[in-house]
Image (tube, rainbow, N blue to C red; front, side, top):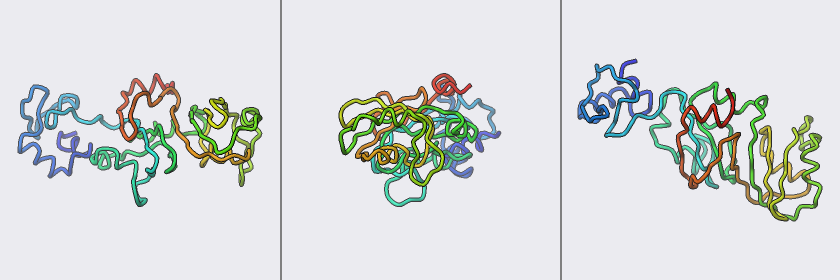
Amino acid sequence: MRIVRLIANLGYGSRKQVTELFRYGHVTDPNGEVLYTDDQVAHEDIRIDGEPLDPPAGMLLMLHKPVGYTCSRKDQGALVYDLLPPRFALRKPALSSIGRLDRDTSGLLLFTDDGQLQHRISSPKTGLAKVYQAQLAEDLRGDEAQTFASGELLLDNEDKPLLPAELEVLAPRRVRLTLHEGRYHQVRRMFAAVGNHVVALHRSQIGGLSLGDLPSGQWRLLPPVDVAERLAMI
């Protein structure tokens, strides 16, 4: 792949715009030597204004989604894509979120431009654990953990019971819940089914990936080795 096309596909601009980057000396090697459009250079040896190129196709990143942002490209108001570099929206193939968090839920959200990886992480067959912390409107009544673990709970307008889920009580109105599937608004609907209401919800972990010390609104690239080791999907 020609170097101009490579850089354009990563979202740094159209081919014409990328050619201009070369013309004005913005594209260099690690030693600061100016590169030209007909050079043959490895991806990892290209710099734009001194910064390494974004990863090639197969990129995976995590975002600490704040409350108030929507997992969409088209909705009105604040969007999760607004928290990422604008060039990420221009990548080919496109970068997309893996699943969603609703507007009022914060926490770990993954993005990738790898369709196979996206399917492997989001597929119900994978059974990848997702961990949430929830603040409730009412005190727990005491039988919620047993109900959620039974594998018999039916949500409204569904005819297939939920998979067993693990509930850990942190306080009378605060819990940690581990799911192994991802139905629409599942945590909120589960507590509604047992007569309670979620007033705040946060996803802290997907598989072996956790937010760690990543601040709200910030993102972090994940090396491919982290995908294999932490998600244990290979």
